[in-house]
Image (cartoon, rainbow over all chains, first blue to last red; front, side):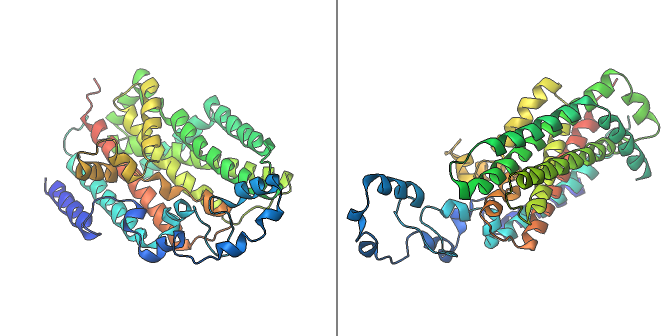
Length: 124
Length: 251
């Protein structure tokens, strides 16, 4: 029972230790700079749409499909609009790696705790 | 640990002779070849398309392999009465479980590496570039496969194989859900749902097919954390499975 108590105590410590929330999505805790690409760019949309009338309807439809909802594509190394979901994945969010590590340690302690607590219950 | 090692080698040899393994492997390889044959309707993105769907196919293959290899192991041992003499003298219950798990895990890892090799050959055949992170991505899928394997063992101790398949598949689907989606199932108790969600695995940790397909580099430390997370979760599931197994009356 001691191990179970220790495991529970560690579970609580780890749960409280990272942002005082048990579990959360990346978008819930992402810092401003991680999310800012969606809305904070200053674009000269008028300039981009200056020559729109020169395109045929077919070409415009093709562009709309290729470029996404905002109608333009950023250069290499910059995020495009509507791609926040892509960067809200664990590999792209180093600020969540600590939580992953905390969860992993919690599971490890729980595993050891359960193994030791159930050890003496039955021989065969 | 010598007993576990010996028993896992026995399990490995036994599973290697099973037709289920070869059947599932063939299905995965055929699916990968089929994916490559589907046009992406955009020549420049054909490589991304094949990689993205190919890695998804390998992930589904990991689920099929886990179920095909392990769902029948314990029920058959019990049915054929080979379990009793095994755990009566040479092995304790945890050694039996670990032996079976390691044997199945090695076979599953080898099969997934073969599928990764198959995907590489398909990319080469279609003259598409092979990204350097394809092998690490497969390694993460292997770890995810081990988690699924431990889940299959957990369910196999108290359900029949036909019920094991939908239960494991359901857990596989739930583990793909985000926290907000999961809380949405029961919005009146967000704290409870968040705590329950933490006890369920986060399968998105193992997904790096999007950045690989789009040429993003992933920091090596992330691989280590993701592998550590997967291994710890597998250990947790195995310990819960062992707790159920230890409580079972085998008479």
